[in-house]
Figure (tube, rainbow, N blue to C red):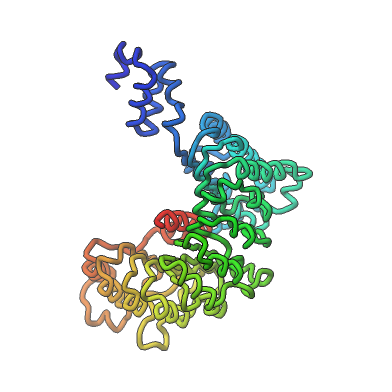
Length: 484
């Protein structure tokens, strides 16, 4: 930088140096700070760092192992934790862990020490972050996400590992206490989100939220694999200006829905619900919002839009969940063992044709069931035809016939901004190949591209469609709620 190399630049007042920094990207700020100690001091001026986005862990993709990143995290939190206004932190998949969608579980299961080391690193990093935020009264947005839920699901991080690395639960108790201190010390919190952060949030955490923050909070998302509800109706009652809410579907009770429908509250704009079929035996759908409850809520919150992700939920339960009055904008049906039926797709396309914009249908299994069997019309084509606002369609694990894919592209055209279909999900009708010359894949690409008005190709990389469901829910919820 020519300006910094001059003697005059070294003599610039601190206010002007900070002003120069304000026009630079974070990376360029760091480069410019190498000029001299005065410029380096100005680098950490609070006004320059109102927002901090961090991703910790993830092995080589995350820039080193989780434990190697701890000193960097400590440095950043020591510098910015006491005054940063917005913090978004993701704990990437624990170092050394291989995603079950891609590599199986052998790496983690064969090395018990791995889980212990990962657990120690996770606890230390969470303590570092929360300890630095405890006295931050400027905090307006705190968003935490942890991929540790993957290991929780497979019992790799269970009570036995916790007791070995955290005897007496001292660190876990300290983490929970720090989280509550942050809430009680906050004065203008507008966005609070904690998703799958092992041990951070308890059913009592929200009660610690200060009175000023109960008036300012507009978005709340507390989701974990815990059975007890993390968000109670009593605590939601205090949050009169809440406009966006994200929670476990079974925790969205009839009482909570009726409370949110009261006229003395700010209308709700976004509601994100996660339904885990594996938990329905111990956390049943009984007591969740009824059709009348939804009607009352929609009358009060006329602009309300709903996002639902259902993980391994059988079609019978889905039919119970999908009430006619739900203003459903986005739905993600993800499964390993269960099978979504054509009846569910028929119901979705009929009930939500005026509101649905995002539809994701995923199944991670060797078989590719055909939902159009014994039907005159393919349910996916009918969905594309009826749902006039459909902009995102992602499919994997179900058979999609090539001619139906062409029909979908023509029905929605350029308005369908995202059409992701894995290559292995696409099949070709042998009877049609008699009438079509050339390579069927080439013809399909050509026809779909013409229908969409842009170049299109099947998804060759399954990671585009087969990502970790909880991570997808967290990120989709973030963008969905940010658009309110």
